[in-house]
Amino acid sequence: MPINRLTIESAAVTGTHTSTPVAVGTITGDYTIKLFVSAMTLANARIQIEESADSFSTAKPLVVWNFQGPVPLEGLEVSFRKREAAGSDLFGTAGAEARVNVVELNGYAPVSATYDAWIEY
Image (cartoon, rainbow, N blue to C red; front, side, top):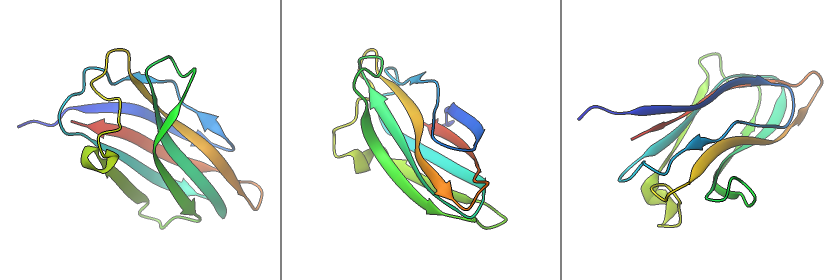
């Protein structure tokens, strides 16, 4: 079965940052959220995938990852499967959206991180 891929965001950031939301209301069944950090300076980062069914009036963290840089030259990939959500995710709910939120990026100046985030389903 072919895997569908929905890009959440590809970005280079130098501080806290929130991506534009993507619709996930039509994603039913199994899914995997992946985050690939291709570069990060000597910094600490907390990056989370958030979901909402009300245009982010309320945002619910689905998964939170903590990183300590610098990352290896080959980058660093992490993933999160639907079964890890314990049934509390909003995927497949009408109007549901997901986004990347770089909640924290700090360390020795200048700090930066480059990442790609996507959903496979």
